[in-house]
Image (cartoon, rainbow, N blue to C red; front, top):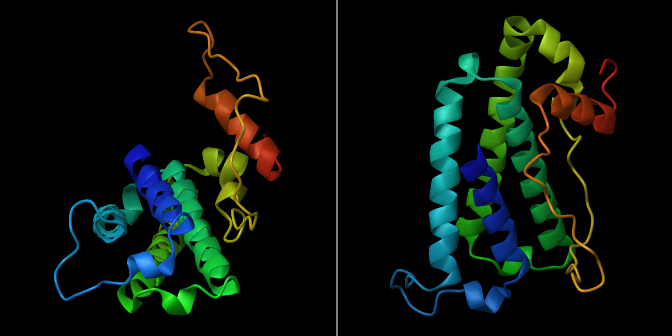
Amino acid sequence: MAYFCTCVAILIGLFAGVTPAFLKPTNDQSPGTNSTEYYLEKTFDGLDKVLQFFLREYRDVNLDAVIGTRIVEASLNMLLLQLNTSNLLAQLPHSFVHNIIRLRNMAREFSEDATPYIKRNDPEYYRRIGETIARGLFDLNYDSRDVVTTQNKLWKKSFNEIMSEADSDSCLGEIFGARSV
């Protein structure tokens, strides 16, 4: 799951920090290994492989997998919205836009297909935090901004601090408004 979320973060980061002219191929050759196009294609490929696996195994996954794909779906929705709002969408290569839409739809399909099985296979867990997988919950349309670390004291993790999965689930349920936490 960490790889999956990392791929989405890379995808969004690459688009957020790239001008459309940089994305346009200058010739018919494949992109070099030090180009944004190359890394976008690798990211698309990685996400595609993970989603293909999830789509095959949707009957046997846990709720955390669907939380991840809902975050992917929402992130790609917001990416498309921001690119469209800033009039950059039309300037991107069609294949990139097509891949973003395709991957977003795959994440949505998996989430929709897996949810009934999660509800059936683990009803207690679903009752506690199942609302966190509602479609649209993670569609957070905020402008990105840099974090100035010199102004903020960063929290230092202590090795004595451990959060259990139950504590984590309770926090998620509280944050996202699940009825029973």
